[in-house]
Structures are given as structure tokens and as C-alpha cells.
Length: 229
Ligand code: DX5
Ligand code: ZN
Image (cartoon, rainbow, N blue to C red; front, top):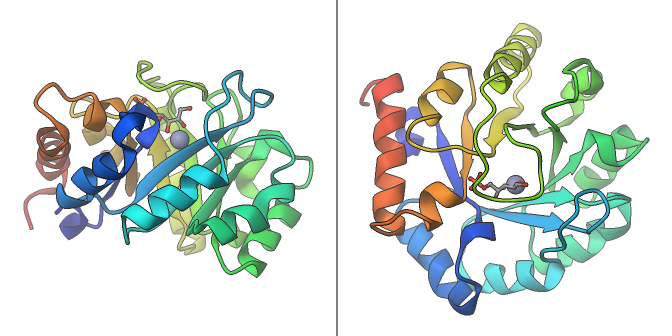
């Protein structure tokens, strides 16, 4: 498993077949997924509307893996309890989505979940610097959020490197996660820049030879950078 190298893979169900969601979640689990990434969009923070607590609950019933819930929504503080009840393990909010990220992150942790802070490609690292000591996850968006299957933005690799350095210099344990356009072609650069959790939608659920093959290709790309354990 990729986790042998300390790198985890979280398939994003945004690219899954929703007609057989439970089965697709189990396929990812059997293929060695370390978590399931669930993209929540509200039609305001990002144009599309996707899923909410009801889908998180359905995924919770389909797997024992941690559920990494990515909130691309305004006023995330209003839904912490609903997502907790639905079975979320981690809630990641966007720094652009609330003027009070520090308070919301604290509320997520107080609800017994791990808390992540995400930032869009156009948002500078300085926007999250003061929050790094109080988060479990830092989510670097390597595409503009809203849709699966978009091309990876190469300039975000340098951003990952800068956040990695900030975390390491301060001795902070937050997991550096990357989301958007992650594939066998781009995963290596992310890992080399210090990312430790890779979200992949299209590369897993859109893989022509299936979920297992998509996961295997990602793992091979990671192993090529990390060296085999
Ligand atoms: C985009 C979402 C991603 C998306 C990634 O707004 O946050 O999680 O599912 O999809 P791919 O891996 O296809 O870029
Ligand atoms: Zn996401």
C-alpha cells in the first residue's frame, strides 16, 4: 500500500458512478484506499451543487475507512454537527469561505473531528499561516475547486513546498494534502514537494482499466519517488 511510504491516497467519489455508489466505495477500499474523499459543494462558494450529509451517511455505511469531507461551502460552521452525525472523520473548510476560519476549525475539533484548512490556487500561503498550529490537515487545491477531471496547475507544487517547509520548521504535525488533477503523471511532483495525502477522482474512478488499476498506477508513481519500502 502507498501508506508504506507514509503517503496516503483518498479517492474522490465525485467521479464515481452514483448509481452504484456503495459498490464503488468498496472497490476503492479493496484497491487499498486509505480514506474516501467527499466533495461538498453549495452552489455559492463554487458553482455546482453536489452532496451533503445524506451521502456522507450512505458512504459511512459502505466502508470503515475514514471519511475526508471537503467543504466547498459558505458558512461551514452551520453544518459541523450534521456532518459529524453523518459519520465524517475529517472536515476541511476553505480559508476563503469564512472570515472566521480560526473559530470554525476550533469548533470542528471540539465536535471530536479532525480539522483541515484548504486554500484555492489563487490564495497565498500567508492566508493560512496563522492557522497551521491548529489544524490536522492542510489542503492545497491544485485546480480551482468545483469540478473533477481538470488539469493540474503546476505552480501549486511550489506552494506545497513552501507549506511543507513552514510545517517542518515549526515541527507541526498537520498532514499536507493535495487535491485536483492528481494522476500518475503529477503525483510524483506532489510527493517530492512534501504532500503526504493525495486526493484522486478521475485518476481512480475514470481509469479505463478500472479502480484497481487506477490505484496501482498512482502507487507506482509514488513508489518511484519515495523508493520501495
Ligand atoms: C474539485 C474537488 C476534487 C475533485 C478532484 O473541486 O475538490 O476533490 O474530485 O477530481 P480530479 O482528481 O479528477 O481532479
Ligand atoms: Zn476535494
